[in-house]
Image 1 (tube, rainbow, N blue to C red):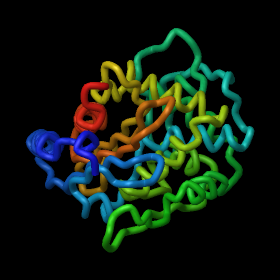
Image 2: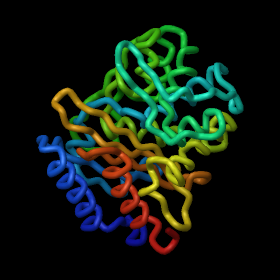
Image 3: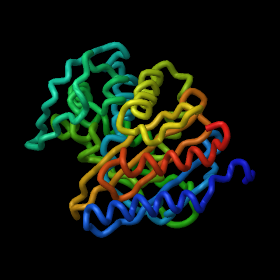
Image 4: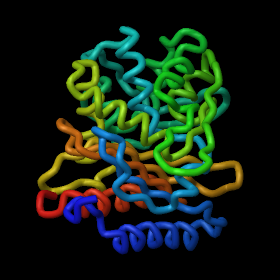
Amino acid sequence: MDSNEQPGRRQVLAAIAGAAACAVECSGAESPGAAAVLMKVGNRRVLACDGSEAAKRWLGAPGSTIKPLSLLALLDAGKVSQGEEFECPGQLTLAGRSLNCSHPKVPVPMNVSRAIAYSCNCAVAHFAQRFAPGEFEQALLRDGLASPTGLLAGLEAAGSVRAESGAEQQLQALGERGVTVTPLELLAAYRRMARRIADPKMWPVVEGMEGAVEFGTAQRARLQRVRVAGKTGTVRMASGFRAAWFAGFAPSRAPEVALVVLVQGRSGGSDAAPVAGTLLREYFGVRA
């Protein structure tokens, strides 16, 4: 590993530890551990990894980090177009669960890009109604979300994806039900998106992830000179703690690295995105 590629391990550890400590103090819940992994997009080489056991074996719902995959699957299937719009009503109930949007009121309708940038539950759930029963399950399986990645040595858990329909499949498209992943599986799925950067179907998805970092929930992963594409997620687990996610890649239009961060915390934006920013600044150095 080249010295100019090596992120500062001490700084990465400090960032993860700080986020986890804040999460425990705020929630009072037992911490599940934390993981941060940075990899080369081109050859899958892991450049930095802290919390390798959590990265390999922790299983949980991906939350909103799955929304780019959901909308890309719809674009691939020709079931939504790049410019198609939907007026967000702000309120959403699925299978008895309230999933109202938390983003500010937007003066224009949602499209694919804005749905990702603002993490709009209403828009993603609306478009996800177009999946045939079990169709999103097949897309997620193709993305590798139920397969060990082999990115790190040692025993690795495998996530699970269920065939869903109706409201349950809409919840699946929001990352709330019917899918569990390890951090490594989510990282591998984002690397696959990064490798499709020249595909026109990816353009609105990348634009949305850029927006998430520039003005959405992932702003604390933003760099000054390098554009980042990313998405946060927050999931309340059955045990009561919150899993805070960030997944993404950079530079957004010519990806060199992909990364995933998982910590216990209040939200992906406040707790996972800053760790991602530390990793990326250490990797890009003076370019950041």
